Image (cartoon, rainbow, N blue to C red; front, side, top):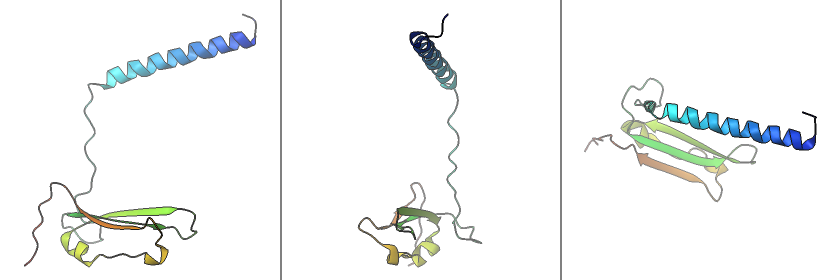
Length: 112
């Protein structure tokens, strides 16, 4: 086959079609596979603490250069969550966030 523009375009279309068929075939083969296990840590993020994580603490602030936002999330036990507070108020901006959310499925016992 001569090397012409229409010949190259036809080869490209044929290769795209073959790749799409391979992708479909691979997806069908993977349909029976089990989902990977949830790798969510179950222990507190703080060093030396082996208590179960009960809360997700998130803070969003501007990075040092001011070019974009940073979002930091840590999973903490009850005691460390109580001691947690905003750490980057000096880099707060209009969309600044400091949020504490309970982790689903974790029972929390608070001291009275």
